[in-house]
Length: 97
Length: 244
Image (cartoon, rainbow over all chains, first blue to last red; front, side, top):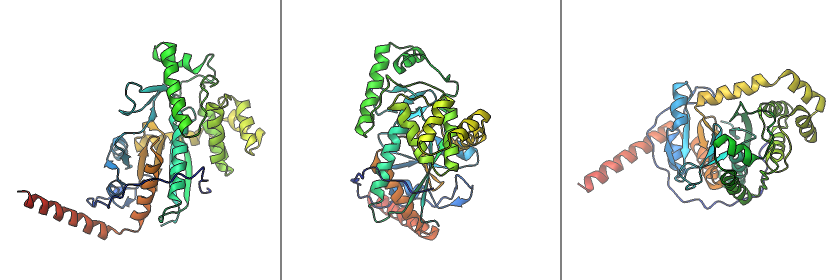
């Protein structure tokens, strides 16, 4: 697979946040099941709220394990036959998929 | 550890946030490429059917479909679509919901898998997204899918044979099973390095930050992480003592 082509660079204005230590919990690799580095460190260091969200919970039950990185304002997703902006778009919350 | 950051993306062609998320992710990757942690980013798309019971053909506009499906006035549905169109425009996409052919996407996913075998997956995904959301082209019928695939260099007859025989259906189902095992309920969903999940059409800066952190974590040993955790615990204990 080739690398992703750039489609117009956007310089991000990243907040300077020092890495926050996280408990060293091994997380199964989502694709291989292999134990890996603590994923919580990514969330903390990235400046986003790390949480073992729905993906992590369900994935763990199924033998996988993912850390879902969640930002404060949430991000729009399509779920089922609807598309939601959880808590981010006021009264406007749904569009067709 | 590979010098390439692998990103697996689950999405559906008929998902407006997936195309918007694709643009935002690409912008995030472009910004990541300018950082000191920059590494090549390898992207692989995976199938996710948001509405597998959707018919191949729906007579009517997207607003009418939404109105019937959700039991709301057409005007309200149109307002929703206009809102999404505006957001799409903010990332350089020109959504045209009046021209959209609402359709089932399972065949489009099969074509994406075929394109992957030929090293053209990213081109196919982009062509299908723009076909659906910007150009009013049908992405559910064999003939139109073959035409779109031929545009990016796939053999039209091979595409038609693939769709006739459902030759890539097992690959589509495997992607869906993988998504289910991850607990992925909504798309777009990005899995970085096979471990870190990012849900939704996040802002580019978020993608950049996560990519940077993944690279930084690769250089961090478990012992270093444990030491950092111990320092954090000690600091928290000291803070608690100081405020007592």
